[in-house]
Length: 110
Image (tube, rainbow, N blue to C red):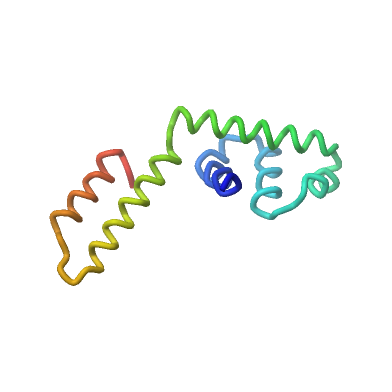
């Protein structure tokens, strides 16, 4: 979902946005406020809020194109789910778990 993607991008790159962009993204995506509610609270136009949110989204997407943190996070999460699945088996394949963990760490993971 697009909303989840923006929230994840904000987790990775939010600190690099201006304070105003951070406030608007938090209010809109994390607190589920409408653009109108944010505009009224900050005494600005709806267009100003909309533009700031779109600019912040564009900045975070551009950063992620360069740093690729969201894809790496998704890949690591999928690999960790495989490790958990393997560990839940009655006969754990230690070699497979070791290989999966090495793959996570090879990408500069966690």
